[in-house]
Amino acid sequence: MSVREANAGHGDLTAGSWARDRFADPRAAQSVCAALFALDLVLRFAGEAVSGPWPRTGAVIVVALTLVTYVVPWSRIPGWVPVVVALGDLAAMGLSRLDDTGGGTGILMVLPALYLGRYFGRPGVLLTVVGGALLVSLPGLLYFQGDGPNLSRSALSLAVAALASFAMAEAVTRLQLQQRVSAAIIESVDVGLMLLDEHGTYQAMNRRHLDFMHLAFPDGHAGKAGQLGLVYGLDGTTLVPTEEMPTYLAAHSHEFDDVRIWVGDDPVTRRALSVSARVVRDDAGRFAGAALAYKDVTDFMRALEVKDEFVSSVSHELRTPLTSIHGYAMLLLERDDLPAQARAHLEVVVRNTDRLQRLVGDLLHAVQVDEDALHFERVETDLTQVVRQAVLAAEPAARACQITLRVEAPPRLPLKVDPQRIAQVVDNLVSNAVKYTPAGGEVVVQVGIDANRVEIAVSDTGVGIDAADRDRLFTRFFRARQAAEQSIQGVGLGLNITRSIVEGHGGRIDVESEVGRGSTFRVRLPLSGSPDLGPSSPHGTG
Image (tube, rainbow, N blue to C red; front, side, top):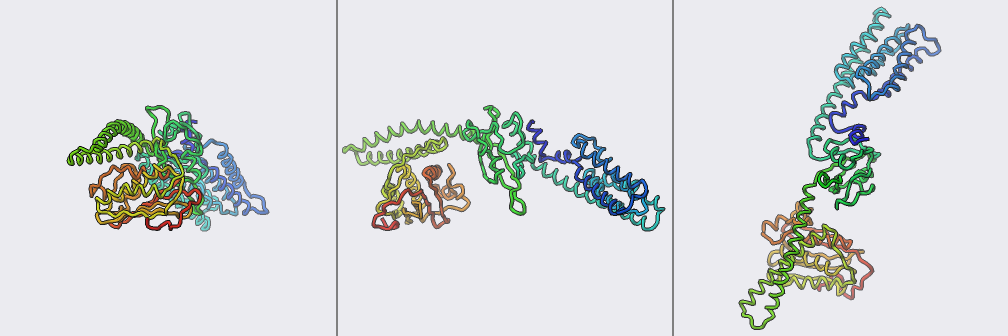
């Protein structure tokens, strides 16, 4: 089965779905009609033989038409066959009334009238009126010679059937219009859209997603969630297993955003997709299906690859000359015969070289995070000492900015971590706090234990972070509005790297902030064992 055939079997989001549904299988409607027809005959002739040949003829016609609906392949029939079935029902109802009892079969005209109105619109209403008048009302009037009660039954039955057919036709026309408008909107978006039912069966997709399906499943698709194909993970080489396929996750009630995959194996035509899913539930809260959106992010992903290659190359090229400059400048500063002015100039060179080396290091770390190359060497470490050393290194910058820097920590807090990486976390948070705090402010670093976690909190009385910026705060190269407005130096890598290190240790980082009041960054790391805190409180002043 091709992708297009699988899709056609489950519908699509275009107006074409109405064309396929136009002559929907009428077995259910015809079966109901036959059952009510039989009920009328049973009630009319209970305990008595059917008088006259016409009711029997009508019964034979209805049975024959019902059998036909179960035999005929409705997906391949001409358009006039359903009309014949509906008119045949009307003829059977007209014949069944040609009996001394009259019966109530005339009211059953509503059933074929609804069918004609639904699938043929206003022409179906006309067929209902003409067919009902000629096949039901007129034979009854002729048989009963137009007496008042029969005239009333015939006229009212025909009127009710016509109104029912018209109401159905108008409702379907409006629904078709809404469907076409929705389909036009859905087809106009540059996003692949797909619907699943509660069983994970493909129910609908737009043409944009059909293009993605051809890439992922060139040999066809069975129309079920989780089928494996040419679908690769973020690295573009690892095939995605069934339990990680976006459709499988959505079919199992998972909602997600920006799950990235590659589809296709041709380097030229393959596409990168960002997939999001939302679950659909019924009134009782039960899973009823899911909607998935596939956004083409190929250009973005390839730009990221080029950017990372460029950043990595430039960073490596810069590191060697910077190390040389820094080393020679330090050697010159060790001389005792340097003039004071030359020493001051060299100190400027060293400070700026240090700054450039940190920037190059941040750029390299950013690339390593993308390549999953951030390695951790966890050893038993005194976290208090790591924090105090990081704060000590930040004191010159804090004094220069007239900012008070304090530490509140236990005398000792052993924890198995990568000390250099954790020191980098504290360095980034403290340096950020100093940069974003005006003169006269305060930065406090607290270390302690909260439940089964170690917590490092860095609080400042700085400019704060706008609520609109917090969701993107840890995004690479993002800088908050306050940083741009106040020309605070930085490239927006520190917090992204900090989060990667914290999460690499199995922890998490959160931020609380208020514009104009300051911010608090909390790093929570899992606690291994019960550390010996010593005699002091975890929150005593250090």
